[in-house]
Image (tube, rainbow, N blue to C red; front, side, top):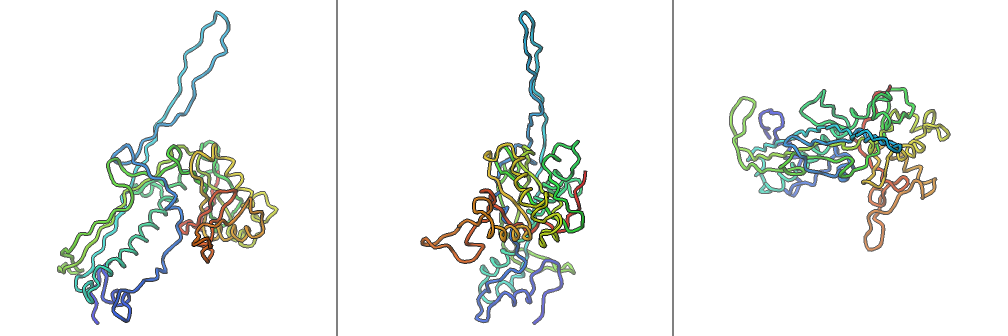
Length: 350
């Protein structure tokens, strides 16, 4: 069977054949590229106060008090403030499916929905990569993520107080994040007057173009997500950086149970650096290698410290399987898996 002209992003007859079951119905596609990105459901979204994002006024200094003597005056004083502007980016994807491909077996809507699932998965992964790693100095069209804000141990930089060194020195480092989501702490943002979350527009049938510039009729869809991140109070995020993955897996070196840099001890330190843990929704985020190590440790430790708590129940019975049967928690704070977090981070230094 012939395929469509080679065009980046086009769905071919070969793609269609791989999406159809033998009985002619649209196949349930097992997405081998899907990832666990638990952070998406935790983000608190807030409409920005600017068409391009959000401006936050931060208190940087308090008025000065005076111990007044009798018959002596008091010098007037005032607080000091600064303004921080966080911008949003526009994340988009388009889909163009040849009309004859989509209508081959009469299941046009189901086939398009199957294709839509992959677009939503990709958008989710791209958003979370930006959430943790994007630097607007490198990619100004996106939004500023967490890592560039917490990327030094230099005490001259204020946020360094919330960067904890786990001691890793090699090239296989990763980070564990503690983020407290709250209206006055850290939020996701969308531009003033726009729509929160991912929007989808069915463009119907359009004239699409092949690589030679020739037209064909296609079903078109547009996904758009105007999103950003506002760190209103930097004290409500902590990065445990330089976690040596090899040491963590082997429980040796910097991650030996007796080491001062062992991840369990540093998680206590991270929570202690949050001024008021109850001011928002605290959550730990780590790569699967970290959450797996913590889950194993939960089997041997006090349930009051590190535990797997029942999350989904049906008729009073816990659903089978680790993912559905419980939520990993550390001192009551959920620990989520985010596969977009890297195991190859550069060492954070002063």
